[in-house]
Image (tube, rainbow, N blue to C red; front, side, top):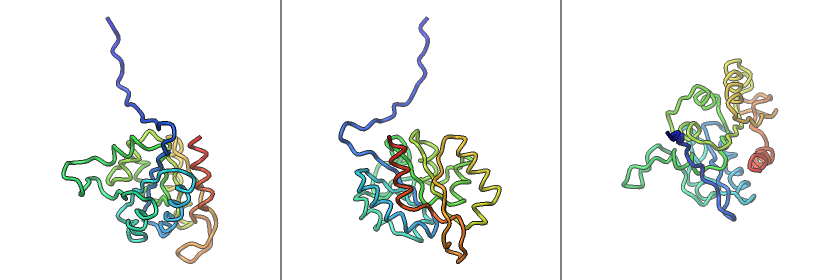
Length: 196
């Protein structure tokens, strides 16, 4: 009797000459404004950028700004309101991503992913993708060094996700310390390294 083959989903590979697709997840941090420069910088490196914006991120940067810079629709919700048919954008984005970059990554989104919570588009994409996942944290120093946050980061690293360490700098709360999102060049270089 023939052994039944296990079902393995096919991971889409880019055709020769097709741009690699980066999913850029933007969360609710003051550092969200840097996603505009990141989008531009990634596109200048010959990459395609699809932005997933959380509701809280929209307090800091508009979908229109990121759509203008990326030349693509910005994804914001679980259901595509612009299409009459019921769509599942988290599956399409997860399957077709060459890499998922969450920048900035807040303590909140790190905790949700670490514990398998999928209550918005970005967390669903993260849990559904087989692509490499990079996170660039941005938060207050005390939050970043809280043992709970450190445990969550360690848990994600054990599951194969990569952190782009924050740097020292002036934070939104007025103090100077680490927790400032990594420099744009550092983040872009990390993306390029993981695409090799």
